[in-house]
Image (cartoon, rainbow over the protein chains, first blue to last red):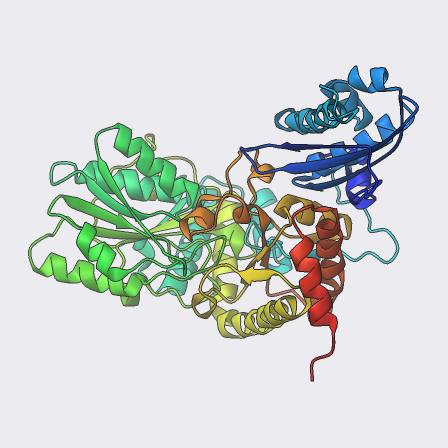
Length: 122
Length: 416
C-alpha cells in the first residue's frame, strides 16, 4: 500500500523534535482528520541550515514531515518558498491518491514558518 | 508464489493477530474439501451418481452446521458469506412482512452489511431505529423495548461486535420478542449476525430465541466465500436471488460443494473444540490485555472488558495514530487492525468507536488484536516486547504527547 520511502521515514524519521533556538516555526493542521505538524527551521545567511519536526498523524503525514526536513536543509529561502506539495510527494516515491493532502500539510507548515521569517517583518 | 507474504527479516517473527478479519483454513478443512474439486465434482441438483454424491456431501455439511447451532438441518441455508446472509435476512423478512409494518430496529455498531442494508430499506420507505450502545458498547434492553412499535417487523442486533468484541444481550431480546409475539405481534422477528461469535462462545438458536442467524466459514478456519443463514422453521422470507430451486427456493445458484463441505467441517471442529479453544484464547487475550495496560502508559481499553468475546482486545493509545502503529507493527511482522479512519480512506474513525463515545481525535488511536486457536504465548510475548517501543517512538514524534512522557518517567520510578 505504501512506498518503501514512506515506510522508511516511518521506521526512521529524520530530524525529530522541538528546536529550542529555531529561527522560524510553522504549524499546520488538518481539521478533518486531526493530523498536526510543527516545523522548526534554523536560518543563516538567507539559507536553511537546519530543520526539525514534530507530528501526529497517519504514516504519510509522518513521512511527508520527515521528508520535508531533508528537502529544505541547504535551500536558499527563495528556493524553499518555491516548493510545492508534488515536491514532497516525489521524495516519497508516491502516495495513495486519498493521501496526497499529507504533502499539502507539510508545505502548509513550511509556508507558515517562512511567513514567520524574518521575525517582525510582514 | 508471487503473492506470498515476504519472508521475515532476521530477528523478525510473523505473528498474525487479525483473526477477526479472517482466519487460516485448517489443514483438516482443506483435506475435507479437496476431493470435491476434482473427484466428486457433480452438480448437487443432478440425479446421476456424480450429482447425488455431491448432494450427500452438502446435506452432511448442513447437518454439521445445524448441530453447531442446535438447529434442524432444513433450517440452514447456504449462501456466499456473512454479507449475503445479512442481506437475505433483513430484506427477506422486511419484504415478506411489508404488509404488516415497515419498521426495523438495529444498533449503531452493526457491521456495514447490516447498516447499509438497513439504509437501503430506509430509502425504499422503511423506518429504522438505531439503538445506542453507550460507553460499554452494549445495547440496553430498555432501549429495545422502547423502540418497538406495532409496525416493527424485525430486530437485527449482532451477537458480538467485530471491533471491540462486546457480546450483546440477544437472549434477553429474544425473550422480549417472545413476549410481544404472545401478546399478538406475530410479525415481529429477531435476526442476529453471529459471524464473530460462532466458534468463540456457545451459539444456540433455541436458547437465544432468534428467528434468523448469520454465520460465515472464514472466521472459523473455513474457506472464504461461503456462509449460512439460519432461518427458523415457519419464518417467511422473500428470496433475493432468483433462479433455480436451490436451497428450498431461498437462494438460487448451483451449490458450491467444496466450500460447503469446508464450512461443514469447520463447523464440526468448532463445535467439538469450542470450550478448549475459547479457554486458550481467553487466557492469552487476558495476558495480552493485562500486560499492554501494565507496560504502556496512556492506554485504555475499548468495550466493556467483562462482556467481550474471548479472542478480541481493543485498545486506545493516547497521542498515537492507529495506522502509524499498525504499519509499524506490520514492519516488525505483527498483523493487527485499526479503527483509525486513515486506513480505510475515510476521514472519520470507525462508527463503532464513535458510538462508544470516543472523540474524533481519540478514535484515531485504536488498535484491535484478535487471536485464534493457534495463537501461542511466545507470539503474545513477541508482541509485548515489540509494541511498547513503537508506541514510545511515535509519541516522541508527536507534539501532543508531552504529558505522557512525564507520566512515563513517573511510572518508571520504582514504587515503594
